[in-house]
Length: 129
Image 1 (tube, rainbow, N blue to C red):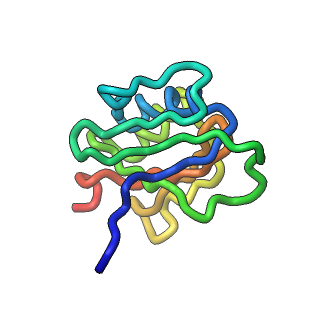
Image 2 (image 1 turned 90 degrees about the vertical axis):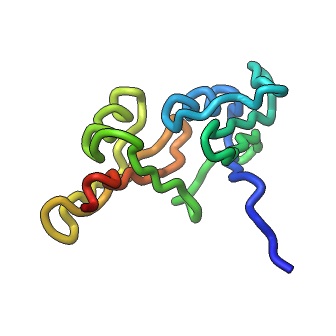
Image 3 (image 1 turned 90 degrees about the horizontal axis):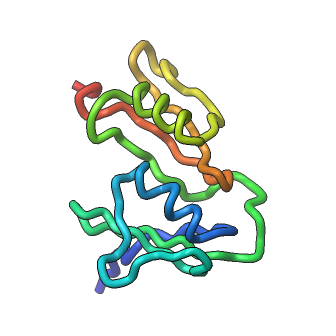
């Protein structure tokens, strides 16, 4: 017997606001039969292509340390650096820059969402060739 991942859960202070922030970052949408609304303590979004779901759930505790689990994002189009620039303009904050860590054209950038949850931006598939 095995299990599968039903969805990824992100603890947060404001489920609606954070789900709204992440939707354009990932290209995800609300569930068709369960739209998210202000004041909802649980808000789920879904990738219309793969069906992967992310649940944002309100918890009373504030984030206090580095995430033990995080998203690694790969741009669907464009380059890593273009995606980093887009996300910084959108409101992400830069936590660490590991570009070039293994030589020119390598590495990743660590960003954080508005509640401080870290995520990495990797090179696009086209940059790996």
